[in-house]
Image (cartoon, rainbow, N blue to C red):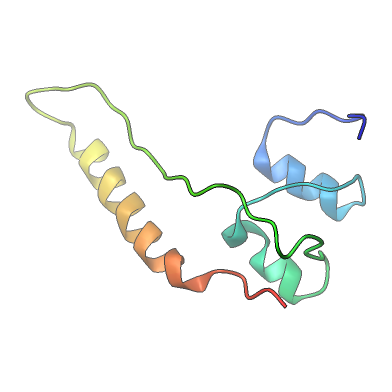
Length: 90
């Protein structure tokens, strides 16, 4: 395939895909409703990305700002919540 469009933000990739700009790889949580509503089609059901992870990286500090601690806790909670809601593929 020859690349004809470059986009560097995930929401813009989703919008371009919904507008018919082409094929993409996006996270399940982002496209779940679009697939269920029939606005997107999963075209390679047997193919998956290699397993990966989400990493919260921040400098070591004697006193971590409460905002950082809260964000990491939120990230971990959302990750646990989203794990069982993977898109069901035919």
